[in-house]
Structures are given as structure tokens and as C-alpha cells.
Image (tube, rainbow, N blue to C red; front, side, top):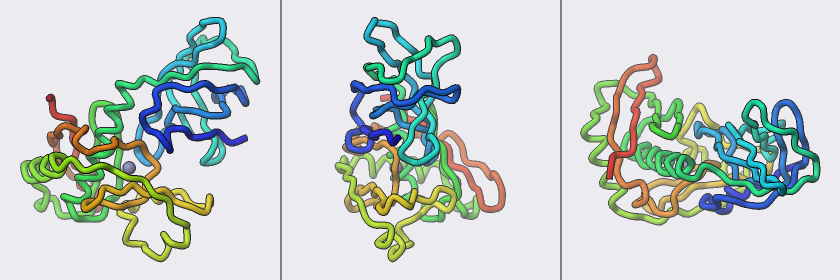
Length: 238
Ligand SMILES: [Zn+2]
């Protein structure tokens, strides 16, 4: 049974009420969720499920289930057994997720500063990286930091839109990442639009206005192989 992905329509939802659909050793499935499952390089959410009796069950991680619209909430070891049909109040670790949203959106901007094919990416709460198919000598930390921060300062509001698989196939230039292809098969693909800056398929969670990122700093640049020149960033202290 599919899970309604509430974070897709509103990345700022911190909590929601839901019902348990399935319980297995792999995790808990719910009828709706605010927990983002690991995907597109973005770490899965953690948080808690509140039972009607007040018991607080810790969600240590979130992963995709057997299909794109199924989500597995991984419980911490020693958690109580939940019952199918039981009502819960979901609560994500918002501070952690908001950092992921800011870093994730910053990577979109950085992919416009470094104009080379993206061969990989990863976002965890304290840092994020993109790998580019580019000559290492063309990557300058100071330049990337300055230009990305200049884009952040333009304070543009982000937008999401949906296009059909066929429309995406007709515009292959929209897909910047060679490693993370947009999920297909559902008939439509979600686009993140940063007007005047970036437009690409992405199912992750983003800030509403790029000014929320604050600023970034480049932690390091190094080679991870012939086609993988890695730029790692963190949020700069404000
Ligand atoms: Zn994205």
C-alpha cells in the first residue's frame, strides 16, 4: 500500500498524524508521512512516532520501500511493537532536516557555478558534496564559494513543478546528474525551479527561498577518480 508523501507538497511539515499500515523487521509503513526516505543523495530523516498512550518511539532512519511510493521507518533497537491500524503522531528531527534542506538547495546552486556534468552527490546534516566530471585544475574553492554565496544573496524563491516522463525525455539537458536519474514510471517527474538560476528534476526537500541557506564554505576539493572531482561544502556560521 502506498504512503502519502507529505514532504513532497510541503517540505516544512514537521509533524502529522498517521496510521500504521504494515509492520515488518525492516521497518514501519504508514498511510502518510513527513519522513523523507534516503534518496537522491539526501540522507533519510530521523525523529519519533508518538503513540496514543504517550509512548515515544524513536525513528533512527528512513528508507524507500519496495516501490517509490513506499516508505520504511526504521525503529531504534528495543522499540515496542506497533500495531497495524494504530494511530500515531509523527515528528521529524526538524533541526537536522532543515540543515539537509539548506545544504541540498545549496548543491543546486553550486551545480550552476561549476558547469560540468555531475557524477555523484551526497547530503548529510553537517556537509554535502557533488562530484563533477571536470579537470581538477578548473575547480577553485574561493571562486566556487564566492559565486555560490552571491547566488544565495539573490534571495530567489524556489518553485516546484511537475512534467510528464515524455516531456522530460524531450529535454534531456534538464538532467545534470549522471548518477542520480529522476524516478520514472509514475508518469510524471518533479522539477525544482530556482527562477533564473536552475531547473532540474529532483525529488528532495528544498528551502522556500535560497536566502535561507545563509552562506556556504568549501571544505575541500579533491579527486575521487577520473570522472569524479569532489567539492565538499558546509553551511557557514551565521
Ligand atoms: Zn533537489
